[in-house]
Image (tube, rainbow, N blue to C red; front, top):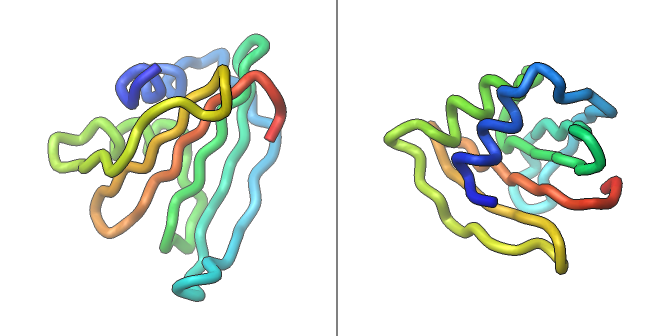
Length: 102
């Protein structure tokens, strides 16, 4: 999987929401948003730093595939998953995919 393929999953109308929540960064003290989804037997979750409103899967997909987005890292997560950090418009998008619920 890569960032473009992850964005395609986020745009899939069959993506099923599981849970979402707010978090406070331990390093900056700023609020962020986290959401977990399922598609088939795979789990997808993302967090977005420095936000005060919920960020939809479509908004994340558009941000991470924007020509001005920067991929800081991207690669395997554990043995069977994917993780990436993408920066766009002052936010960090932490993307994860795996076969187990996070």
